Length: 124
Image (cartoon, rainbow, N blue to C red):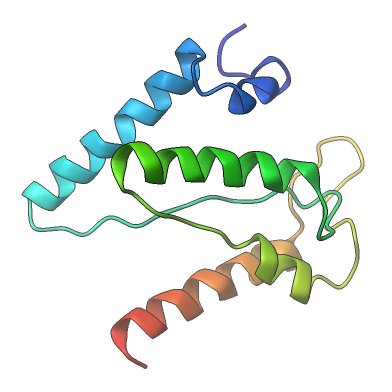
């Protein structure tokens, strides 16, 4: 009953839910541990690919969560969804109707987003 896709979906809307607090509390710990070892951490997420459009309410849910992380811990989470919307060749980019896992093409678009981000960070 914990941490599965179906029952946990609404939890992202409630930042005071026990599981959400736990996940949120781990972000600054991971950041601190890695930076303490000389590494730099960059957070991102993988958006839904089964109903791609500008007004997808799931994207707003993620943005609310990301804003809360920024407010509480001053940590940014990269948002590839606008890039996916702009570059998607169809509204649903999943492998099958049943599992809704992203298609190879969707993976390519998301990979391109992060690749462009890292290249820009390096200055080229």
